[in-house]
Image 1: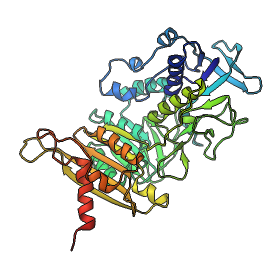
Image 2: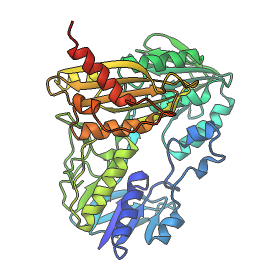
Image 3: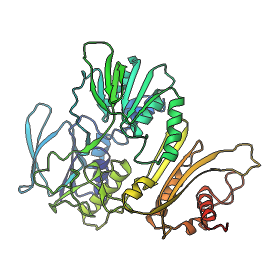
Length: 448
């Protein structure tokens, strides 16, 4: 069997490697429009924080390593058309010469692009739309000389960039159209704590503001115009609104209303010989009645594994996502899973929640570290449907436990009595998850 995969980022690579591991005799061809593959998009933060010496090293596979596993890799190959009836793909090489390749099964891992705005942007030297290796390299070069920088987008990318740039003597502006940072993952209880840390670091935070335009490009400093004010900058990074790249297939595959490719639980599209994965599809969300576009790498890799298994003939279904995330920003660890309280209400779910700060250690230890924890429960059933954590202590593994709890429909009462370890030098007899649930249980049932 011959399998062609379009796109060599996280999803395409995972699918290719999985297929070759399952059946080394399967012919796998990986087509990538860029000249490199497997770049980890957060590599710029690793470089800015001096965790790696060279941006180019932030990869987990090279084309040579893939070829050693039997995968044929075509770099700098731009796919122009797909003919699903003939099962052929046409692509251009670097000299614009056209080639054609056939397939028996096709996997689409084309990923996402930054949302194209209607704004007239200043020259490329002054504004970078951040995503790929080339744009990351460009950002690093420009940041070295820029003194006044605006970062558009208060998601993880924007906040992590602010964190990496603080303390360098630069004027940093973070512009977010929503009323809080990380609003897709955190309720106000925790996002307000992050926002205070951002302001305390010297970053100028602009919430409820949208960029509506830029000034002339012939001046060294130009003006970034928002709905509220004008900010003088010499460089802007746009890190917002990823959108699925379905250009090649939108005319012959079924799409969802949000522009993603419609797939079944096996990652199979409306054409049974074409599979799609990663940022180009929508995902079923636990406790949600809809599928959502959630461009997270953990979703990408899981969907790629499911697609590869089904291409080979092993039936596997995609489990629902909790959109679990974690980050180390502004000297603290932040993690989330499941629905926020606001999202739950939007889904029509009646909820109860608790937000509290609990110490990790017993009081006799000199080192004391607090954890801020938010838990969201469905009213009536008491099922956990969302959780958020923040601490200077690395508590990120706890979010995986909470994600599993949501996936399994664990209740408030079960969390209180869950079997978690205790070590007197590390934690308290009732761990942070059980203790948060315990405090909520007491609050609910105490007799006045």
